Amino acid sequence: MFGSLGLNAAMEKRQKQVVASASKSPPREYKKEIPADVFIDIFSRLPVKDVARCRCVSKLWSCLLRRRDFTQLYLKVSSVRPRLLFTFLYKGKRILYSMPQDLDPDQDYPCVYPHYQMHFPKGLGSSDDVCPSILGLICTKSRKPMICNPSTGQYMSLPVATTKRNLSRPYLGYDPTGKVFKVLTVSDDYVCRVSTLGTGEVTWKRVECSIPHQALHTEVCIDGVLYYLAKRMGYGTRPGYMVVCFDVESERFNFLDVELPILGSALINYEGNLGILLPDSGIIYEGTESFELRVLEDHTDEVKWSNTVYTLPFYWKYAVSHSFLYIAGMTSAGEIVLSTSFLVEPFEVIYFNIVQNTVVRIEITFGIVDKKAPCSRVLTLLNHVENVELMD
Image 1 (spheres, rainbow, N blue to C red):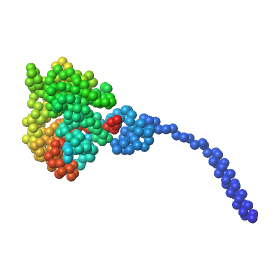
Image 2 (tube, helix red, strand yellow; image 1 turned 60 degrees about the horizontal axis):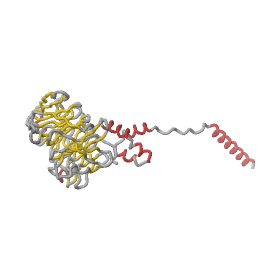
Image 3 (spheres, rainbow, N blue to C red; image 1 turned 45 degrees about the horizontal axis):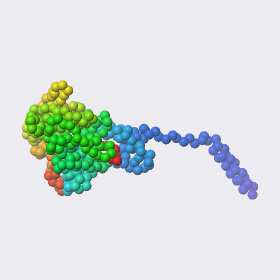
Image 4 (cartoon, rainbow, N blue to C red; image 1 turned 180 degrees about the horizontal axis):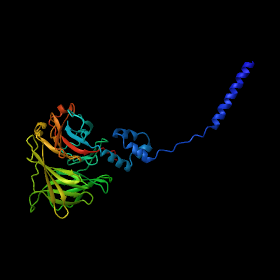
C-alpha cells in the first residue's frame, strides 16, 4: 500500500514538472508566407513539365505561374540555354523534336537523340515550311497558318488571310515595345495583311506596301523589325531582288536593294544586325570553300554593307556526308549552323565556328521515325527558347 502511494506521488510530481516546463516554453510563432517574387524565382528554374504540374497544385500557384513577370523571367532564364528545334512531316503529321544548341567542348558527339516535343494532329500544320522560332513560338507557312508553342504543346489555327483562292506566305514577327506577336502575310497578288495575336478574335487588316513583291525563302526578326528576301514584281517595277523590312510596331515597310546572288543565301541575326550569309558556289557540299557574310551597317540615309569572307578549314570535305545542306542560321557564339535538308541517314548538323575556324559534325537520329519517314523535308530552327505562357 505504501509502495503504491509512493508511486502515485512520484507520478503526480512528474506531471506537475511537465506542465510547468510546458508553460515556460515560448509561444509558437507562425512563419510568414513566402513572398510571390521568391516563388516566381524558384519556379523559373524548373523544367517546363514541372511548371505545368505546379499549375495544378492550387489556384494560387496557377495564378502566379500565369503572371506576365513570371513568363518574362522564364524566357530570360531560358534564353541562356537555347535549343535546336527540328520539325518534319511523318504520316501527314508535323512532328517536333529539340536538343540543346550550345556544344559541350568536353563531349564527343557520335550520335545524338533529340527530345520529342509534340506533333500536330493529322492534316494540321502540314505545310512544307515553318517560320523561325521567336520567343518559343513558331508559325506554319500555309494558307491557314498555325501558331504553336512546342513547350506547352498548344497550338491555334488562324483564319485564312484572303477570301480569294490566292496563295499567301506568312511571316511571324514580334514587337518588343508592345510585347505582342504579329503575323504578316504576303499573297501572290502582292497584297499584304497583318494580324495581331492575343487581342481576342483574330482578324486580318490590309497594310499599304509601295512595292509589289514576291516573298522568298528566308527571314529573320531583329529588334522588332521583320526582314525577308523578296523579288520585285509588277508592271513598271525595276526587276531585281531586295530585302523587305517590316516594322512590326508601326506596320510600315522599307526596302533595301541587294546586288548579289541569293541562291542558297540566308538572312541571319549577326550581333544584333541584319546579315546575309551565302556560300561561294550557291550550294553547300564537300567542295564548298568559303562563306561570304554581308552585314548591314546603316540603312537610315545610305545602305552600307560590310563584306567578310570566311574560308573553311581543309578537313571540311571529310566532315560532310551530304550535298544537300542548307544554312540554318548563326548562333550568338559565332557558329554558322548547317543542316541536312531531308530525313536521310545519317542526318547531320554541322557547326562552323568563324572565330576559331573549326568544324564540328553532329549526327542526329530520331529513332524508328528515321526509317518510317524517309526523305521527309527537315527544318532546323535555331535559338529556340522555352516559353511557358499558355494560349488562352
